[in-house]
Image (cartoon, rainbow, N blue to C red; front, side):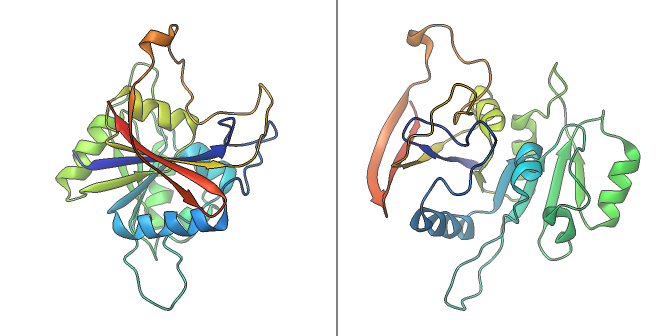
Length: 221
């Protein structure tokens, strides 16, 4: 399996967006530059279809100085191929390596259109709820020579990665802001645990400043 780093950026109260879905920008410019340096060092960047639909990211490496960087493989987890053909990910698939992981329930016609746009479509096993299983996906990426993955997903993908135990390192960027609101999403989605004693344990490795933000680095205990 590749070495997977789960990266999440949120407010001091753990929110990744407001209740309206606005998330630009929670973390500081210094933190965002650092994330681009991390991207330049990994083999793949992984997000879910929700992140693509909400933020329309490029997921490439953008750093100043004129130096050329190797762009990581862009991996989109999209169980039913809901990704828009007008998204920047699809429009730039000819320029940056792009793979969409989906399940057998995906419409064949959409697969064909994505492939014509330059996107590789990979069908992997789904879970009982029809979502892409991340461990078989990670194993297939490892078989292809992907040794490291930066997971930049939203709460749902983050929860799935932790549930399937593919996360090796955790990078949390905490901005000095309070968003509040019970409808504002947090860093980790899913059902969560019923009892505190069943919470996932994390070993803290390092805490440092990044501009005005705090960066907490840890690993699942």
